[in-house]
Every structure is written in structure tokens, then in C-alpha cells.
Length: 116
Image: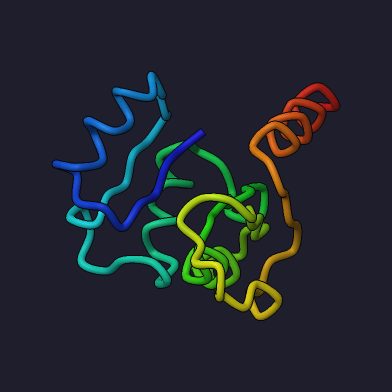
């Protein structure tokens, strides 16, 4: 698992540590010359994890996450929770899958891993 965020590393690292997450790679806004929705941060993370972009699910709670995933050739997974304003037109997002809760997303990911 990797994390690609548009947050600067100074903010992202303490948050990830507080959540006890241990990503295989963390790509922050200040790591590369471009940020999401450009695909380069996602490609960089995939290379670091030694996986092909088309084998990745990119999960996000913003339209730019779905655009980045689409541009990177990854499966765009949208969640309906997080930092989404109530008036956001979610139907316009280029997502391939949607999840309403973190539990349903985790269940799907665990089932996917178990099937490999």
C-alpha cells in the first residue's frame, strides 16, 4: 500500500504516524515537481512499490484523485466520505468503483487480496 497526497510532507507524516499507518511509499506535494491530478506522483509510487499502474487501485475522496488515477492508468476508486462538500456533484467524477464506508472498502480489498 502506498499513499499519494497533495499535502506537504511536514503535515502528512505526523498525520500518518498518528493513524499508525505504515505505507510502503509516501509521496507528498513537495516530493515532485507536479501534483495530482497529474499522473506522475501515482506512477512514482507504483514504481517504488514495484507494481504496474494497471494493477493498482487508487482510492480517493476528491475529483482530482479520480482524474489522476484515470490519467495514470489505475483503477479509480471513489469514496463517498472524507472531505467532500455536500454540494459536490459526485456523478461527474471519473470513478470506476464507489464505496460508502471505509468498512466496505476494507472488506473488498481483503477479499481481493485473499483471491490472489
